[in-house]
Structures are given as structure tokens and as C-alpha cells.
Length: 137
Image (cartoon, helix red, strand yellow):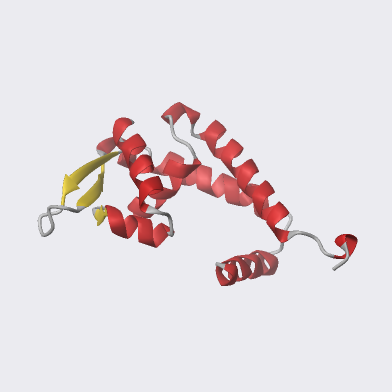
């Protein structure tokens, strides 16, 4: 394919990712959180007490990356990691009071980011974008 006739989708995805990282670092700086930890908190807000392995699976992120993010969240006081009663090799991840107190602020950051990247789209375009991204994944 000719270079000028084929735009590189990966370039735009990468740019959105970089801008997202910068945005989340800035917006969550007061909480000492970054984009990586943000995704885990959002998932835990949906289902608290999930096994660490299941958290990796639901976010489609490798176990090593999940372990590092969980360690950071634990260090910052957002989660507690407790052995699973049924499987002592596994851990369940629970939100702390600090995480619950900051839930609304963290959701506001998510809403602000989504608004930033979709504010020039119609509702139909936004829905199509979401559908296509899910399909790509």
C-alpha cells in the first residue's frame, strides 16, 4: 500500500493512550494514582472483593502488571489484599474506606476524560466508536 493512502490506526490509538496517561496523571496526582491504577479501581467499583486473577482476566492485563498495580494501590491505601478463604494461594482485593470516599472524584475524572475525547462526536458516532473499539479488541 502506498504510505499516503493508508493512515496508521495504531498511531492514533497510541496518541490517545499517551494523552490519556498525561491526563490521568495530572487529574489523579492529588491521590498519587496513575492511569494504570485507575482502571483497576474502576473495575473494583463494579465488583469489590474479586480475586486478583479474575481482575487480570476482566481487564485483559497480564498477572505481573496486575500485581504491580495492586501493590501500588495497597501502598496508597486504596485496597486491601486478603487470602481467599477457599484457595489460600489466591488473593481477593477489597476497596478501603479511602477508595470509597474518593469514588465520586475518580468517576468524575473518567467522565471528564471521556468528554474530552468524544466532545466533537455525535451520540451516534460515540456509540459507533465504542462498538468498533470493542470489535477490534
